[in-house]
Length: 295
Length: 133
Image (cartoon, rainbow over all chains, first blue to last red):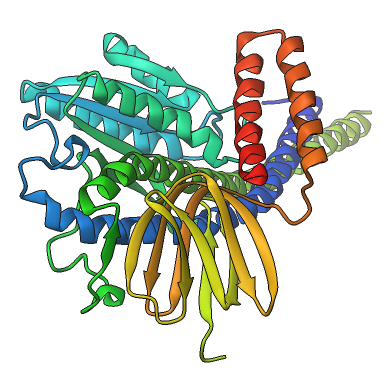
């Protein structure tokens, strides 16, 4: 049986942990709002980009001279998996979910005889991936110095992917990140970066393009060649923003339940503490009374 | 208001500008072009340069780099990786910024900081060129 002093210390320590988790929850909540705004503000650009590429890409897809970023290299022997996670932990299953999905993909690809290369974005991805796939990691990028993800942070990652592709280091590039749905739900998303994923023909032409015949300047092929690398950058940027919002959402939820757990624990410990104290008092009384009776 | 065109300037980070204008001049890769209401639908890539927004006699100038312009049904959308309003930017200030950045490059201790300052310097150089043109 724990002594009264032990129980008191225990309660104090749980209480201070609770204070920390509560503070973390509130910090995450305010960061979440900002991250969410940033993710939403970035949507128009990505959406318009996608629409134009979709309408151009569909018409170019069948041609022999279609850009390699669109048509691919014609093989799918080597995969580059980009795993985007956070740098910090204490955000529930956020990182675990992304990494589990990515590892599943790696295992599946390796089993079917493909070569797999991994690019880690975020410290957590690297920490886990290097255990099993150390020799497959081509690079690990950390973003811990970045407070707010800006386009300038995403561009180098995308440029890295593009230069690897130009060097013929891989055929297909897949990006893993967590799309932000709400503070409670984040959906691990697999997105194909290279070759550029096009929506089904006919479906991609949004309502804005209905019937409109566009003029292209300089011409379609050149525009697509110019836009495709930009699109990769934008997609990476969007993934990072979604990830940032998801991370804060996941942390908020995790810290909220941690705070509640700590509250329950304090209640339980306080009950034990009071019982133990009462037991000690009763015991002393019995001793006194039985002592007096013996006289 | 029937003869105005809607102009939207979008960067990857946010919607920078959304306004009505009489005419917008866009620096296309194949040459500058003016867009007024009733323009034919068009998609064009852009080169680093200045977008001029003409409205009611006043002209707002913006430096843009990297992206494309899309004209559809009286809406002009410019998607630029980078955009700076030039309204409150004078040649002297740009020169000053460039000088400061040159010093930063000289003072930079590690290669990473140096590369960063150099990139910033190159960026401002382009802005100066655009401003002088």
